Image (tube, helix red, strand yellow):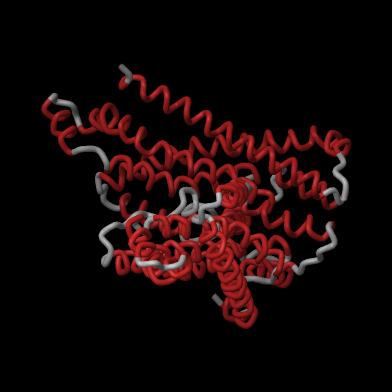
Length: 220
Length: 235
């Protein structure tokens, strides 16, 4: 078994195409999952009737079922009742819903660490509940939950490889597709292993930049 | 619901296969985790670093790539695996990577003075592990390991992609068969059913994990969470 670098060079453009799809799906889903997490956490924390219970049920459902079944349910199940969406958007929907459930818990965990005194202080300065949430609680909570939010985002990136099962041409799909025709498994797996690793590192770097920015008001 | 009842024998077989995959994977993962996890607490720097490398590597690569790697690459190296064995092997690499962290953290959570007292009494290294450390560490290790089992049950659904007739694959088969016979796809109902069954099994296991954590944690006053970051959401 020898490593064929020329083959890898020849397949490189296709892999880059897959990488681009992976990046698109991942970034879109990270943004959407954070939005879900934000609203879900707020519903749970302020015990909004109905919405709070719905969020709880949603989180439990996502956490206790395989993502692959969730994906199949969205991509094959929904069209059966007339709600067909494309592979790309099925993927984005599945990943966002999946990661959103964890982001709810991450953000809620961050919000729970905030001292009660801050709320009283904010109210005595005649801030409204909404202003308190937006200006005081949220910026602090995000700082605390940033590491776990990063973890979930990294898992999301890795789980984007599941989308190959519905035929979305992302990185893993391209690799497996080429292996089926050319049988050069070692080269392909080395390449996508390295690319996933690189993506994880880029994501971590992006988070540390955000972290650095958020610390600004606290720096002396 | 007729479609579920009509295919009951097939569904039973698929569930059996899923549980079989989960049990075998957990057995191997536990074995590897215990051996390497204990080795990671020994005083050899090289050993610690190589185990750390193993853990980080298999947690950084997507689970699906782990399984596909085993399934596609090992045959080219002359090792032909059945789909069942490939899934077990691929999941064990990932499961043990998380298990090693749990075991290592559990052992390291035992206070250092316990070690020193045992040495002062003239105990040998393995005696300390067996009589002093293990009884304390097991209380911490069991709950997260139950959590790992939940994730492994979920991860066995990957078998559907390499051709193991487990629960999800059975769902696919039923849908295809029925779509050919009746002309309408029952995908919504069948995948909904598959989701519901996984939900029941995995909720029970998560509940068990939380229960064990409360129950076993009560006796010790320190209760560090041993769940490796990123594990609780891996699949």
